[in-house]
Image 1 (tube, rainbow, N blue to C red):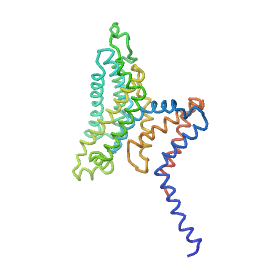
Image 2 (image 1 turned 90 degrees about the vertical axis):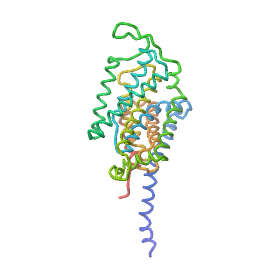
Image 3 (image 1 turned 135 degrees about the vertical axis):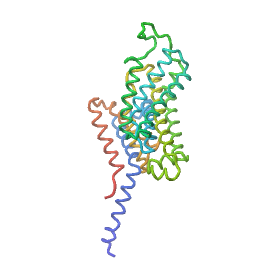
Image 4 (image 1 turned 135 degrees about the horizontal axis):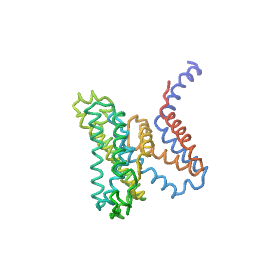
Length: 332
């Protein structure tokens, strides 16, 4: 065999290995490239205080996005997480300001009420057989309307004037305000990530959820209670969205109209980017965290470079498209 024939025979193997490497580690390479690029372009980007700011900025997105990832594990998709976060934001602040609840009481009640959103989604998807994207889109509007109606279409703050004309006498506990501050909010983000990752990768329940997402009929025939796991996935997604809304309330110290709506697209993007971590091709919490890091680094770096706000979405979209292309490119 000639050297030319050996070279031609070996070329596809090298190319295949390159594509496999990019498929597995494209997202990680994107993060490294972004950090290096912004670090060279701005002296203050790698400052420890700025790194902390990035971690704080992605904490809420990550928590909500992990909920989206869990809905993806069973082959579903939850578009209502932003509205659920808005509802939780309104509920927890109102329980403090209007009813004088303590921190633990308000958080528990808020999370329990958020589970109703997950049950509502599960009812439409599992019982009524409505496609998940359409069902959760409808839920998005319903929950958003409930949140705005509950808050009378405005903000909920301490010492606000109630519709009855009285003044709200409740206060937001000082301990609650600590949840949205560093390092607590970062610790919560990392704890949720680790628990979700371990639950999905090391427990039988996580493996069953992946099995349902891969082939629901085969999973059902193998004895897995698919209905139970599908309901659980949507309830967990709503719980995490509710937790994100609570963290948002702690961070800003009030309830703002549709405050969680702005987190929806970033959460969805982080969850989908997370599918590609290490070439897993399936939803995972660590990948979702990495996707949120990409979004956080990109947003922070563009601000530091004084990029006009109206151009940021263009650049963000292009960088994400390139990152996804690097990850998902396949040898033809």
